[in-house]
Length: 197
Image (cartoon, rainbow, N blue to C red):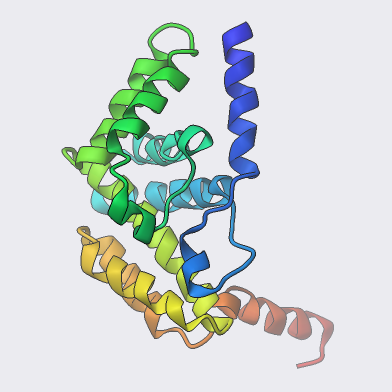
């Protein structure tokens, strides 16, 4: 129980670590690693279902995919030019998940390898979901005036492998006000209910 308790303590750090890539575009208050992981896991679930893969496994991959950042930090694409973090990520994950009882830890590490090497359908979809979430966040920042965010959208558009992710991103790109589309029809419905159409 002591090791599991320490593991849960460390995972709380994900809420305190900023997802720093888009700071290059001038964004000061970026989302946290935990924010990113949660949304990318939900995207992974939906994409996996669309692509005929296991949505539960694919979402699980993305729930854990950035845990290593509690130990080695998040790195933007400029710092990644100078740092090869792959071995550090693997070492951190192995040490982190060793704390979990039984074979849970080795299962998680094995799933993360599927994403890292994109050698299974679920691994490919998990990576697409990770990238798609970053493009979605970049679109929101772009709409707030951070023009440098466009590079993230362009790079993700070129990198995506699954048809579902490509179609979703194309639809998002077409939106003039992606940030607010989700509630526009709800507002109209409320007025109709109140008789104020």
